[in-house]
Length: 241
Image (tube, rainbow, N blue to C red):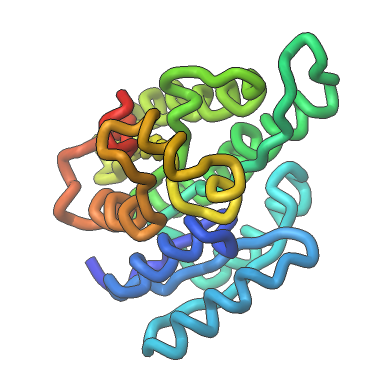
């Protein structure tokens, strides 16, 4: 299916940008989401358009239901959005004993509340077309847990339950719902946190993954080739799990 519109939340970061580019290569009209003063989405839009693809940027705060609803109303004026990739997420790490309520709520507000704020308004228009793809980007932390990331792991693990439940609600209407759980992926944040020796000790493949490898998995799940795959949490972590 070509020329459908695809919304990628957090599309201006390294992983989001790779996902946007991959979807554009399949002929999707990509909507690159960002928030605040981050100009990353504009760069991604220029790259896609420079390669002959279709892209535009949108900005709203996923944690704010009113702002998100307003942004989505504008998008829906152009018809249904049939591919949603909820990639946005933030870290605010601390051991739970030292974590405050703001840190807890802030992380859940973007990853978990943001999933609801984006998906719920777009769902009925998508279902009416009898074709759609909803993909959440989770994390290895949600599968295995990680010290100092109780909030982040809880938020991402919440997406797993939402994915499996929503998949059952949507399956008869041609809409699939899946999640991908990346492990150590080569982004500016992971480069700062992990050195080659540490990665080699953690990952059986002895290397980090690339944003493009994750994007190819998302690209597949967003295609007709994945029409019989739904309700799945797919790890992409070099063999850690």
